[in-house]
Image: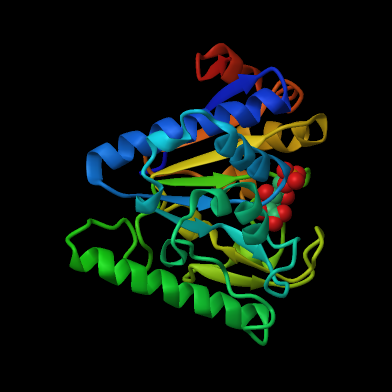
Length: 269
Ligand SMILES: O=C(O)[C@H](O)[C@@H](O)[C@H](O)[C@H](O)COP(=O)(O)O
């Protein structure tokens, strides 16, 4: 299954972050009603962290049972634990520390003081994912990929070069097959050493939400939604099994292909 993207356009980046937060809270409540627990895969970047801040500020945040949410990450900057540039540290500061979530449910990538290289950290994360999948399978949960736990919602930011997670255009990470996690070196966005889920792992999620704001991203959004190839335009390859949702602001929407605007796949909010 590979879903066609839906696009939702918001007036500006602030309203977009608030809307991502509201959708996330509502969806988590629904998923918990259906099956008790929920799993979300977080992203770094301005909008990814801004949306978490908006969740923290939301008056309805306690509608979610945060003790029954698992958090994983789509990518991480390979830096020492506690470094403020780590995506996990930023997510903790923006939201997780305020929720009092138990560490057992917060599945961070390994840091550069715990692993010798980004490749070792990638192997470590793949093993954690595999172990979580094994436990879920033992409980009778149907998994779309036996190497991965169920990802209900996977959030992604998009770079001006159309990278998602730490999968950059034309680099080895975006071409990697047969692995769920990959070590990245020489990334054009600092820091150069990173760890990332592969496209195979991203595409195992039930729902993939891409949140993008700003005029500098308009070209990337336009190309991705025009159906470019994932090696050149990684964001084009990110698809959820049940839903692929592009949540963007007006500026990022300025180069959307006309057919998306005409065929009703686009909602202006
Ligand atoms: O580690 C990271 O930086 C990310 O996870 C990365 O994929 C990010 O989401 C995009 O680069 C968008 O970031 P901005 O919203 O800051 O442009």
